[in-house]
Every structure is written in structure tokens, then in C-alpha cells.
Image 1 (cartoon, rainbow, N blue to C red):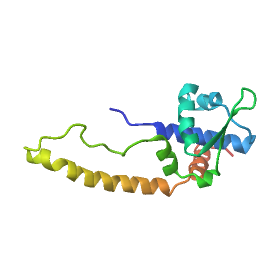
Image 2 (cartoon, rainbow, N blue to C red):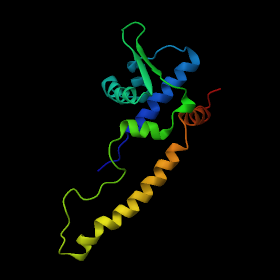
Image 3 (cartoon, rainbow, N blue to C red):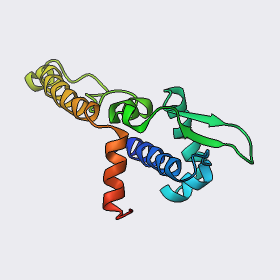
Image 4 (tube, rainbow, N blue to C red):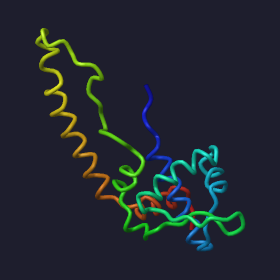
Length: 147
């Protein structure tokens, strides 16, 4: 099993769009974004579609001046908004099939783990809600040593 990287890719996409806004204020193509992420533009467009449905980006159709822009200021986009736009379901899943109710561990594990998972997920969501795309972008620029 591997971790889901859609939030990471979505934040990369949004940060690349934010970077473009500083330079040209033009719409940026999914091909340019895909080169930054080092992946296929089709994959990028899939994530952009989810971000668009959540109101985080806007699209302009067309092969010449088409592309993507932030729909809001980066300071108004929290990491929780991004996470919710591209991730469905809880942070941690319980069993896909019902444990054996005749076993004490099987009978008690779901309510026990649910309590811990719910607390961990709430802490995770609180942290994401307290951080904006602008904060992440500024930190990226520092780490990339961009003036």
C-alpha cells in the first residue's frame, strides 16, 4: 500500500500557478505545469478539474491563451481546502469487511480505532486549516532560494 500523493501534487500545481502569477499574470497551461511536476499533462488536468470544481482555480479554454489561474488569492486558500478538493474519504480507513464478532478483539477493534483515528484526523484537519497556500508558496521560494 502506498500513500496518496494527490494533495501534494495539487499543492505543487497551485504553487506553480501562483509562481506564474508573480511573473506574467497570464493563464498557465497544463503542459507547463506538468513539466514542473514531471508528470503527464492528462494527470495534471484531472487534478485541475477537481480544483476547478472546488472553486480554487479557473480555466480559460483555447490553445493560444488558454490555461489555468487561481480563482482566489493564495492567502485565501487553505491546505484543508486543497485536501478536501482532491481527497475523498477519511484519512484512515477501518476494515473493509466486518471483523469476527465472536472474537473479543474483532468485536472491540472498530470502535477503539475509530476513536483514535477520528482524533488524529481532526488534528490533521486543524493543521491544514491553519496554513494557507501563500505560506506554503513563500516557504517554497525560500527553500528554492528564489529572490
